[in-house]
Each structure stands twice: as structure tokens, then as C-alpha cells.
Length: 623
Ligand SMILES: [Zn+2]
Image: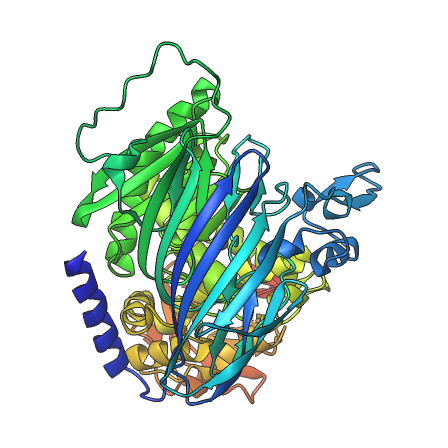
């Protein structure tokens, strides 16, 4: 633990010195005591929050997220769901047919004892009652005393929560029967950064949180096993597979005089240093396996013992693969800084959290490993490199998809498979769909779920894969490592990433960030003419690119050419024959070869996301 703290301090010191000194970020420490009633799914909480204002601003209000309030009829999430043309299938019932669907919001049907809520019973600032108001999923607190720059305040809250039926991510009794998936379950302070407060209503997409330390005690029926964020402080008292020494459990009495009405509880004590969220899941039927892997990291696996045999076997195989993913991400991105990571069966698909993931578990082996590869990669892209996902969803989903697709190829030994094929196909479909919105769209505000998904995951992944085409793969690999070492434990922005790529490659790249993420412009180049030794190309799409060309000559030989893009003011490392640069202002470009040309192909690597490939090759008929 001590070593770990020193590592964090070193990391922070190093990264602060490596960047703009005007950067600041807020800090919050949570102390929570939770008493969970696993029978009626309600819990009482005491939360002590120490908030440090590192901003240059004086704060007169603070905001919290009360995410569980979204799971109530009439909430913004419910109304949004009812007005989305292609709602998330997990959140609706289809009363029609597949062809003619009639969707019904599952939230709208929740009964009083099935909804989610967080009710604030009392709130004090530095021991004095403070004015607060719940507005949907947001709690607005008007402070008694403003928090001056550099100062702290302590906010003490008593609250009551109810875990909703599982609709999206969190909830009770998911479809695989996991009792409690406790994500976004506590009053969570909203982030305040250089753009101000990020206190948006929860309608299902993406998060942004404040870095800090968590100290959480959870009292729950002693039959439940908890998997969570953070390190368990009392493993030998708890047992449940956490014990570090052999413990003698009290022998069961043969006969009890009376059935005890009061549920016996265990109080689990967790600490999580330097994270921006805290998640847990609990079930009486969890198997809990753990394996020790490189750098003294322990991987924990929690999965239900009531699954079919084939699924249980998959969960065993998954454990070795998860260790391989850790090695892969450590090597290609940077060292995982915690000593624990947990893969927990729960939720409704796969979702990333601090030091853990919740995934559904009744999956074929490939799917189980694939979802774990993806969620684990989120520890780097989104958790440690904590971009504001509500604004830059493509940076967390796209970058995660990029690295996890490469990791899957290596770990699963997929041979020559192009790991980006799915992403390019998905982007291509989006680009021709007519409903694409620019990636600067707030995650919540995309009209179509499909367009959001394809933009965040596929177009975001293509952003990186295509960047390797522009700056070269080695430069991209170095950029990712440098980006991680400079910006982990922070909230990097798109500009931070592209500046890192510029510094590593020595190329001007701002135009690429703007064109790709702030517009729906496309890349489309064509070969328009071959005349003996002269080749003519045309730029049809708005987005300019440097061009790799493969030319086949009539004598059977071939030559690769590289046409630099003038606005890069430099070139990627290449072995191709470099010819005159091409400025974006000119729609056409011609050059001469030394031999008679038979055929020409633009970008044989396929990494340039050209939306019309039909005009990328031209072959002259042999005389
Ligand atoms: Zn993801």
C-alpha cells in the first residue's frame, strides 16, 4: 500500500511537471457507512465527504448525482426512452413484432417498491444544516459558506436508497439472477473543471467523476459475497474467499431454539485510493476465485455457481486470459497502478468501473473473453485517462475498442485477422446512413442509439487506426504510451491527445482532430487517369490525407509511392518513393513514373477510411 502511494505521488509529480501548469483538478474523499437490507433492497447511508477546491474559483454551490432517481416513471431517462426512435432493447418491452415494433418503457412500468431512489434525509456543511434541492437525478446544494480556492469543506449526508429492478447497468435481480449490481448507487459529487459544473441529468449514457479516496463500509446479510472497487480491509473477518489465512469459522449449532428473525450481517470495509468511482455487486451464490499475476496484482473473479457447466468452464479459462490482457495493456499503454482487479458477473452487458468490471456471465467463451478484454482496457482509456465521457465519448469507447481489438488478436492468436475490420465496416455504414452526427455531440444528445454507438465505438477506433496511417504505427504506439504517462489520473481532453501525437511525430495534426471529430466530412480519393507514365488522382471528400500508392508496371514490377500532405509540414517514416507534396487546396494531383503503368491502388493498407473504395484502384487493360 505504501509503495503504491509513493508510486501515485511520483506519477502525479511527473505528469504535472510534464504539462501545462494552469491545469487543476478537484479532489474529494468519501467515507461511507452503508447498511443494506437485501430483502427489501433498501439501504441507509451516512456519507462524509471532504471536498477540496483546487480551482481558481470560489464555489457557492455544489451538485451531486443521484443516479438511482432515473429509474422512476416520468424521469428524464424514462421520457427520453419513450421518445428515442431506436431505444436500447434492454430498457423496453416490445409489444409489437420485430418488423413493426411497439416499444414500452420498462421504467414507466415500475411499481413503488421497484423504482430506484436516493432520498437525502439531511445534509450539513461543516456541521451546519445546508440548503439542498433534488432536481431529477441532480442534488443542488447552496452552500452556507463559499469554498475559496485551495480550501476544503466537509459535507455530511444521511440518505436512504432503494435499488431499482435492473433496467440499465445497475439494479437488483438482473436477468442472470445476480442479486445486487450496485453501480452509480451513492450520492456522487459532480465534477467541476475548467468548463464548470458537469451536472447533467442521467439518461443512460456516460459519466465524469472527481478523483479521490474512498473508504466504504457495507453491512449486508452474511450469506452474500461482495465483489467491488477497492481493497478489503478485513479479509480474515469476512472470509468469502478473501481470507489471507486459515480462519476457524464458528461451528454451526445443531439446533436453534428459535429461528432468529434478525438477519446476521457482516460489515465489509473497503478502501480505494485515487479513483473516481466506487462500484460493488453482491450475491449469495457467487463463486470467488483469485489468481496472483505480474507485478503483485491479484485478479478476482465472481460468478454464480448456478450457471450451466459450460459457462462455469468458460469462467475458469477466462482467468488466464485476463492475466494475458493485463500484460498486454501494461506493455502497450503503461503499468496498471492498482494491486487488484475484479471481473464480476452482474449488470446487463459489460461496463467499466474502478478496479473492476460488471459483465453478464452466461456467454460463449469468445464473447466472455472479448467483453472482458474491452472492459479491462477501459481501465486505461476512461478510468486512468479520465476524459469527460459525456462530451468525448469517442475517446473512451473508440480508444478502448482500438487497443482491445489488437489485444484480442494477440491473446486469442487470431493470425492474419485485421483487428479493425469491424470498426471500419461500422464507420462506413454510419457514414452512408444519413444520420451521422459529429463526435462533438454530447453523448446524451445523439438522436439515434445506432449513430451514437457507431460514432463512439467505430468512428472513435478508426480515429486511432487512421492516425497510424498518417503518422506511422511506431509514432502512434509511442503517442499512446506518452499520453498515458502524462495524463493518467487526470481528465485529458482531445487537445491533450492530439498535442501528444504532434510532439511525438513532429507533424501538424490539428486539422485531423477538427475534421474527424467536429464534422461529418469524409475521406474519398480517386484515381482518375493513367496515361502511359502519368497518374492523376482526385480528392473528392472534404478531408485531406497523405497518400500511399502502389503502382504496378507493365513489366510486372511494382513501386510504392508516398504523396505527402502539405499541411502536415512533414512526413511519416516510409520506405516508399517520396514525391511532391499535395496541398488540400488543389482537388487534383498528377505525377510521372519512370516506367509504363499498368495499375494503381490507393492505400493498400486499408487504414485510410475512404468511404468509396470503388475508385481507389485503376487498371489499364493489357494491350
Ligand atoms: Zn466500452
